[in-house]
Image (tube, rainbow, N blue to C red):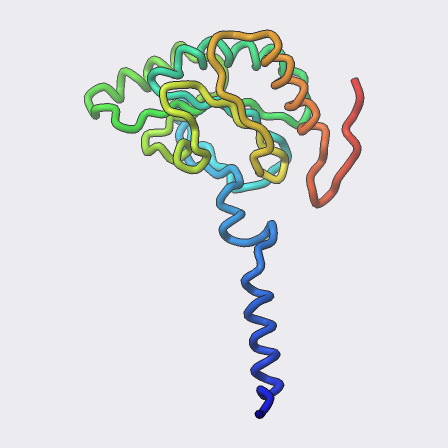
Length: 185
C-alpha cells in the first residue's frame, strides 16, 4: 500500500485549518452590530462593527413601541453619564404603507426623545432575532458583539437595575483587543 504524497497531506491540513471557526470569520462578523439607517431627524447613521463605545439598543415594532416609549427615556436618564456607552432606539417599520411614512417620520422628528433609527426594511430584526410584538433590548460590547438581551414589557425596577449595571460594566471594558479591568463606582 502506498502512502499519500506529502503535498496531499499538507493540502488536507490547510483545508481543515481554514474550515475552523474563529471570532474573525465572515459568519461570526455578521452578528456584530451593523446598520445604515436614517434617524428620526433624517440624518443617516452608519455603524459597521466595533467603535469607541458600547451600545444599548431598544428595538420595537408597532406593538413594542408602547414599551419603547416607557423604557427609552428611563434608560436615557439612568445611563446619561455613562462614558463609553451609546443609547439607540430602532423602530421596526417594515410593511408600513407608503402613504403613512411621512406622518411617521414627522412623529419621530417631533415627539421622540433621543436617537431613533427608522428601520423600514426590517434589517435590525433579521440580524438580531428581535421578538415580534414586543420590545427587545440588546447590549453590544465595544467590538460590536451582542453580549446580553432582554425582552421588556412594563417598567420593572429589578430589570432596569440589571440592564443599567450590565451596560455600565460592558461600557467600562475597553475592547477585546485592548482589555481593561471594569471601573468600580
